[in-house]
Length: 153
Image (cartoon, rainbow, N blue to C red; front, side):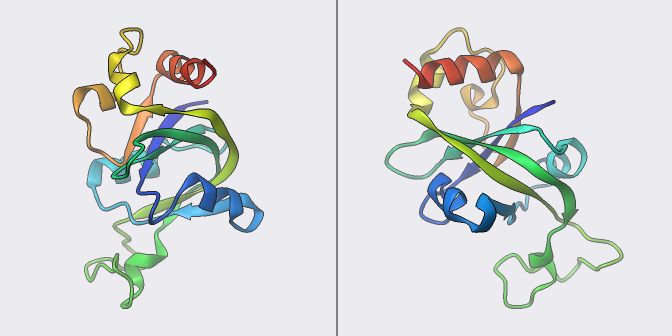
């Protein structure tokens, strides 16, 4: 099993939206960075754990946990002329962008802020500490456990 972090702006889609989605499951769409796309396409496996990270808001940080419930498939929004994520170069035979489905597991007992993550010297590998701006990033098991422990203090 692998561990991941997915960034989202809660005004657009939050951990609450995931919890309230049909079957508490949602397609994770709109990723338009090639490295993030590659993580989704090549790395995410069914059953992997995912931290939902709220970004660009008053309370920035890890808000909850989800699991990968469906592995990568072509992002349907890339083919939708009316979508903000439409990509004229994408075709059904050669999609450029991928999504996974994630299923809500839980809210954290308390949000773990970016400031707290950066201040924790025991967290050593997560790209957030290094100014990582990707919307999809791997998390080591050690850093995952540290962040979960922080949510319970």
